[in-house]
Length: 297
Image (tube, rainbow, N blue to C red; front, side, top):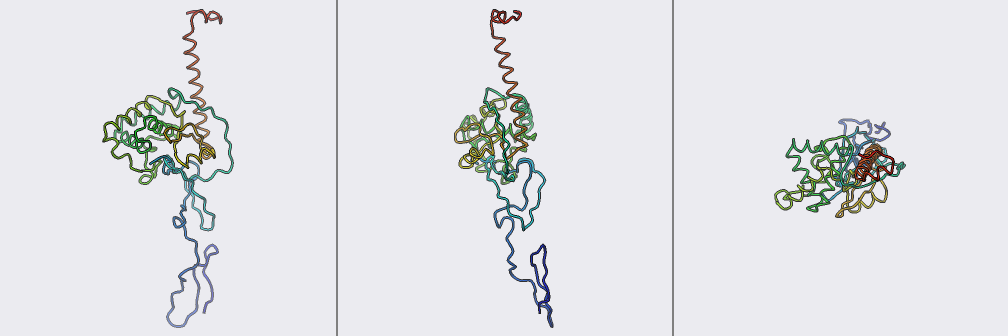
């Protein structure tokens, strides 16, 4: 005879029966529970704040893991944002946009904190030859042997480390095996073993370490339908597309990183224009300087 029920958070997990003789199994086979976690294609642990390490958005997108929160079984599931290749991003959706116009300019080279990030990258790769090879394989995995495409991938990797205040080793992680930004794909197998392919990659990396800036200080990359959605939504700010790969800086999906990037970009552009003005002034003839009332050298 059933004399009661056992519940947890309002959900029935068993019954209390009074029996004569030996007790029988009182746990029902199916209590109508909702499958959890990956059974529904979702994680029970969500990331707040910084972006999760997810597969990047390119061919083949963590970031620093922020404190995790557990979702109770009765809460609605938060959909994961697909972001591969530099693309696996599962930040909680942002409800409101607070974007401000940003002046995005590509130039001959980087300035300010972006330039300092390149110097740190150079030192780190020199100290870790295996990491340099890994970066080359990521470039190949994302953009094959396309000179500008591979250069853009390396630029965004180094700029992302500068924007996040992390190391190249941290940003150059495979998603599936290391919980990082870049989807593994072929992992660039064969690229370094092919002399012609490696020469393209080495040349692209050399330009980036020298301070190249063909992506306008971009920090992220994606392609295909994901890139199209991000361009349309403004979750990430589109800079340019090279060989099918789109390059971005943080948008309203990452407000803290967006604000930091905007400060870095503003400072870099200020330095760039100041340098250009100084060079122009130095190139003027003494007569032109005198016409402005300046003392001739």
